[in-house]
Length: 357
Image (cartoon, rainbow, N blue to C red; front, side, top):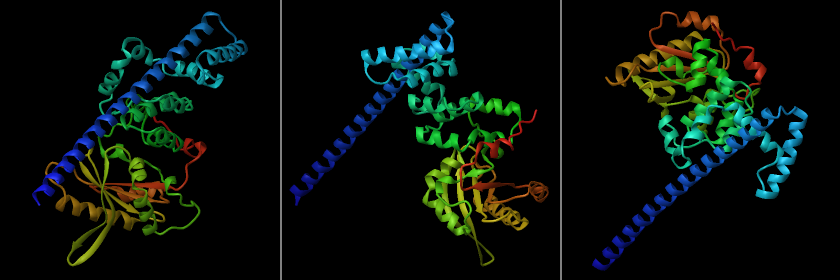
């Protein structure tokens, strides 16, 4: 029996050793990957600068510049292999022109320390943007939006796939809908900063990841189940600081049971966020119900260190004038936003995009 215990301890110790070595290897691989990304981005930015400076110095016309890229692509490919197609060289040239602020970073900071320099600049960032990230960013013509998506990719650790999804869903435009020009400029420069409940709310929310047909009819329970099944994607759509707490949270008052569809917590706002799902148009009863939920949470769930909970009602339709009057005089923070089951077209959002002076 004693021998078996000794053997078991050896196995446990060995598994611990194996796990520890695995962590070291994974950490090293991640650092190597970040270093490769940094080196590649730095090199491509400098190549873009060299091309632009050559063209500007010689006052190269557009048609001659294209011929130069074709020749350059052939010669570089012969010397260094793949990676120097005409399209890629054009991207490098656009990269330098679109991100001139990288000049100071890549010229003054040694490559091996660049990872640490950028990590301290963007405290919540755990990775360096790759060349694939920047290729996606170059597809955005709006300079303010491009700057915003770059900051968010760094701070929120977006993969290339998530960056593409957020750009396709026009996140910048959706957040800009309720902001004036000064706030939009700040958002473009610093990313999405959440300081008060209004900052965390979008309108509309884009739920295309549910793969539900937009013209079909779904019950609220079906929508809730679909969101739970794709909870990771829903958290990304909700934005920064959100974590899932519960679904169908039961409240019992005077022997009566009430159920909140979804409960989240936002660590940046330090408060609960109660979400109610509506499959149709917003009604005054929905506001009253949410107000009831918030009153209960404030008195029974909130701790002294936390802020008051906020409510979010997701609906397919709402009348802005109706919302204005029905929410007037309510002390609790209640928001009503529409949700869309398909990505909006640029025209659909741009026609609503009004930046106030």
